Image 1: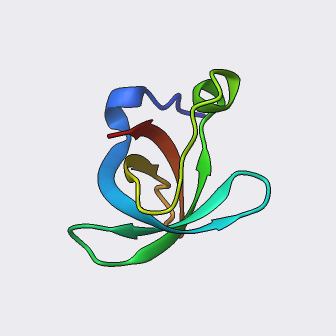
Image 2: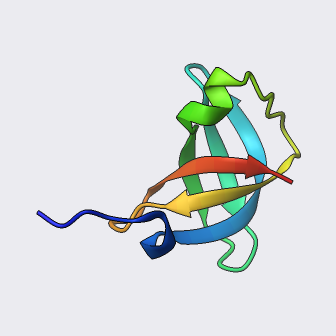
Length: 74
């Protein structure tokens, strides 16, 4: 199996439009306009960084589509 590096991941910016339990969020991507389901990264959970509706974020997209990981709040 190949090891994926951080530089190989596709990142996109977006805005949180809905919050679900278990640190899941519905995110609207800015360029594509698509809505995806995203979860908080481990570092953001450990450091207790709050993410609220309307916040601008950076998401690493899953290569298969449909999900993403929130890595930074702008």
